[in-house]
Image (cartoon, rainbow, N blue to C red):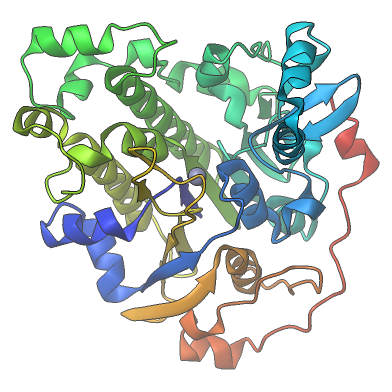
Length: 412
Ligand SMILES: [Zn+2]
């Protein structure tokens, strides 16, 4: 399972036409693809956790990317926004300034229900997870887990303390193996960055040399390349090191960031006034980011066995918000993408009407596990190859996979 934040057919379509995405084009021809209805509020942390658990955010506990701690009380962003709306914004500000109210980025301890890797692992399947949102602190799994805070650079920029090497991976010793594979933003090779822009070296040097507290197009590019390159290197290393797995998942964050910074410069996007010069300089950033994902997918396909199935999904698409004058996804909730490929799946099939909630029951079905009655989505039976469906009739749903055990949430 490959998760790519904010990936959209608005880019994949035109880039496939230009021959830039051979792996995606291959899946469209030989596998299944379609749009994926998303969730409101359209927030990445919330949706990726819904994809991993099959549950509503009120049940899984992740209502956004972060919440506030007010004297031990948890206030979600939804609550603080409501408080603000009834005229108490000033009170919140004072509480924050006195540090009585603190920003708390959600983490794995806030996830109250079982994830896909908990379920597959507990049924005896070997699992491997890299960079999925809200996986730090890494809790024990039947395989490996490289948590999202292996890359704490963005949080550090937001002023959140680094987790000090605690529980960044499971097993703990994995940290020492993967640390050298991480590429921090300032260490992304200049030659790599050059592949994303069209400008003289000295201009690019000035662009990326900026401070990270200002999210410029240069620092966002640096951050995104670093994040996705690191996730990919760790994933490839772990998949080799840990041997056959029943479930492997990797998450790429960078696409959302580069699209916010550079979607408007793409050659075929013509909805906002940008100069010809800007378009020439920055127009390749988003296409090259898609090409990176495409190459990773090509590498995965090359190593797939006859029993394997590949899912590539996004939590939501990417849309233009004319009011703000920027590209954003916070309110609009454009659909995400869905790709599935493998011998057990249909060929050249376009599916319609699927939701992000349907990913989990479908993967469970391929793992030979039943869905649960408390999951929102359904198995996408229509994408399964007819021979697979006749050999493997659907299993009766169980009532629930239960909540996570107390030992999970006690983790520190
Ligand atoms: Zn997102």
